[in-house]
Every structure is written in structure tokens, then in C-alpha cells.
Amino acid sequence: MLLGLSSFTRSKYVGTLRRRTKKIGRHRMVVGFIAVYLIATYLYVMNSSFSSTLLGKAHGKSKLKDSPISDSTVRIQRIPPQQWTKEDVSAWLTEKGFSHLRNLFRVHAVSGQKLLKLDEHDLVREIHVQDEHDVSRILHEIDVLRLVMKKTSNWKSVNRAPSLPGTRMIRIYSVGDNMIYDSTLKKEISTGVPPATEVPLKAGVDKVADLIARATKELKRPVRELVASNGDPISDLIEIPDKVFALCDKDFYVFPVEHPGFKQSILLPSEDREVQVETLSTSPRVFLVADFLKPDECEYLIEFSKAKMGRSTIAEAGNEAKNGVGSARTSSTAWLSKTADPLVAKIRTRVAELVKLPMELAEDMQVLHYSKNQHYWAHHDFFDPNIYRGFVTSPGQNRFITVFFYLSDVEEGGETVFPFANGDDRRVTDFADCSRGLKVKPKAGNAIIFYSMLAKRQQEICPPDDLGCNLDVRSLHGGCDVIKGDKWAANYWIANKK
Image (cartoon, rainbow, N blue to C red; front, side):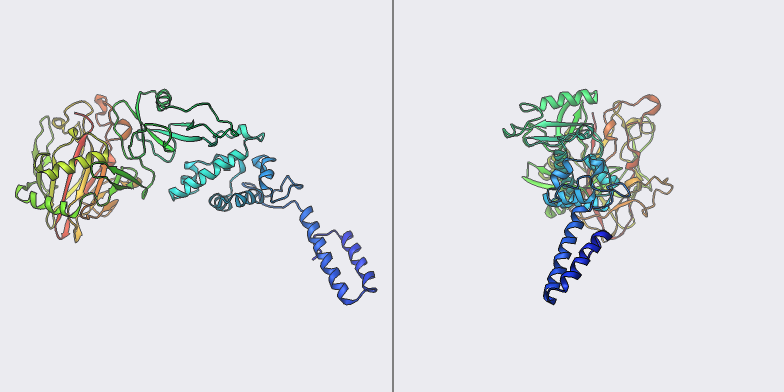
């Protein structure tokens, strides 16, 4: 009980107790021991330097012995971040209710300075925080922590500005950037007039035009529009999201990739409903849209197309746009123009709203049927301009995106396979192999989206010695053999230009 006292102090108190014990009863002795215990505990706490492990260091002590630990905000304001102890920060986070950040730094030892600079890249790539909502909450709590440090001498060394009341930190990305790692431009904007007690970073309200002008300067390309990560145009800064997408020149919107499993909602205005787009692969960009078609629409397309089916073809090499047949593709095909049926026109509009692309760049709808043992071995949807010269109508032109929807379930087999999905760089030697990569099982009504061209180079005209510079060779994919049942599907191919 007296471990917190020096040997001199212990002798003094014990001697006093012995003398007093001779004069008082046993019950008085018990009270005395309790009193000594309380005094010893008090002296231990007040004289202790709260020994702890520094964030990112082996050992360290608090530099504020005279500050009450309950006043944790004062404590971390008065010492530089490098000297924060776990007790200092934990007490402050507990006081503020910041459970996500508290749990984070308890598990991962990072310096106080690093704690202030944590961003999406650190959280996802280095610390492996997978849940996007947890990432968002942690970043918000870090912003508030930066506010606390604003008046300290170390504030200038923290290079990321906080989100002050009435302001927002937004990140502007160029086409093709990963939307959770390195952004093209970061900017603190004022979204309104802050309370009179707060000092805004700048007076007035920023305009979208100002952001476009700044993004144009940073990207060294004319930015024509700012859109949200789901492709919706940004018209004002009141509801602007934290992540903004800059469309330059004639670039088309592409679905941003964060990580497999990431979902975002896309509004289909013509039907007043939303669909969920889920990332299946970041490279190549492959996405799943559940329930894109309704069950009766799938059944109708199958029945409507049966009488129009013919042998599926494959492109032939050369200077002319010719098609032939071969063992690599054994399915049947029907082509449906936008005037073939009102349902086709309706789905065509739905596809345009989903991918934010003009459908005058789309080919007719292709309806496909695979019977038992039929397949389409691994191939690219784009036309290699070095081989299929007759199918490339203008410099840089090619198939940009495929929207592929399943019209039926398949009892066994019939998956769509992407051998290079999510970083698999092994060479493909067997184009009939369905044992590796991402495999998407057919489910009636579901759709998958994948890009055949590189997002950042989608409008680029390639030099003669590198005609395929804008193509994504990792978009190789195939239709596996149907083992049991029948497979019905349909798709649109949409080009990047005429």
C-alpha cells in the first residue's frame, strides 16, 4: 500500500503509527491505516509522471505533470504532438467520444505528428481499415484533433488544413484516379458564412467555376465539368461531396475504384429508382449491378429473341470489317435495334443513365444464348488496331465499355471470368481456362460493367508505333462452358468516339 512513498517517508509514517497505536484502540488503528493508504495513493498519483509508451517511441513521460488528466484538451494543446503520450491522447479522445480514432491508435503505434497527417491512403493501404464508413469517421475525428492543435507552435508543421465550421475539405480527382488514395487537388472551401465567433479561412462563398479554374490549372487540361463520384454534376457547393471528379476535354465519366466490395448508389431518373454498383475488381475495372433488369423483362427478351438467333461470330484480322465463326465462340446471337421493341428502347435509356454515356456511340443490343458445353474463350472486347484494322473507324476509336446483363440463372457453369482481376499478372497460356481470376456467376437480372480502355487515356490518339496505348489489356475475359442448364444474356458495347 505504501509502495508509492520513499523509504524515508515510509519510516516516518510507520513510526508515527506505532506511537499512536499505544494510545488508541484497535478501531482507531484501522482508521489510521486507511488514512495512510489514501494519502499514499494521492502522493503517488500526483508525483507520478504517468509513465507510458509514446506513440511511435519505446518509452516516454507526459510533459505536463501539473495538469489534471481530466482536462485533456488543455494537456495536448500545451505540448507538441511528438510528446503526446497514450494517456494524453486516449483521455482526450474518450472525453470527446472519438471511439474510432481511439481504437485505431491503441492498436497501431504512430507518432503524434503522424496522427495529425493520417489520410485515406494511410488508413486503407498501411493500417488496413477496410470499412469506408470507419475511414470517414476517423478522418472526421482527425480534423477535429487538428482544430485543437491550431494554436500550438507545431500547427504550421501540420500541412493539412482542418475543416473549420462553415468550411469543407474536398478532394478533386482527375479521370481514372483511384478515388481513395492520391487525389489531384485538395482544397478547403467555404460553403457559407460561419458563426460570428468563428474566423473563416476566406470570406464569401466559393463558386464551382472557381474550382474548375483551379483544377484546370493544376491538371494542365481544360476541365469542363465537376461531378460526384457517382457521376452526378456538381451545380453548387452547398451539397458538394468530399470527393469530386474532374472531367477534362472530351473524357467520359468512369466508375471510380476504391476497393473490391465498395458500393455506391446510381439514380436512374427515368424510372425514379436507384441501383447499387459494387466494385468487383479494381484492375481491370469490373462492377456488379444487382437487379438491373426485372424478371419479366428478362423473360420477355428471351422469348422475343428466340426466333432471331443465329451463330455467334468473331472478328477477322485485316483491313476490312469481316466476321467469321470459330471454335473459340460457339454461342448463338440475335441483334436488336433500338426500334425493335419498346422494351429495348427502355433498357437502352436505362443503360445510358447508369454509365453516363451517349447511346449514339452504342452498337445494337446483342442477345446471347449458350447451350450445354458452349462458351466464348478468353478475349478482349476492344479491337486491337494492329490486327483488326477494319473495325477501327477513326484514330483512337474503340469499344470503351461493356454493359453485360444476365437474362437467366445457370445451374452449373457459364460464369464470366476475368483472369487478370485484382492484380493477377500471371501470363495466360490457356484461353479456355476458367480456373483462375474473378468468376461472376450468372443471375437473372444482374448486370456487370467493365471497361476495355484505360480511363486516363480514353480519348488519346496513339502514335503509330504504339496503336494500342489507350487499351486495357487486363480486361481480358471469357464465357465459361455451360455444364448444366442454359445461359441467356445480353449486352451493349459503347465506344469512346465515332
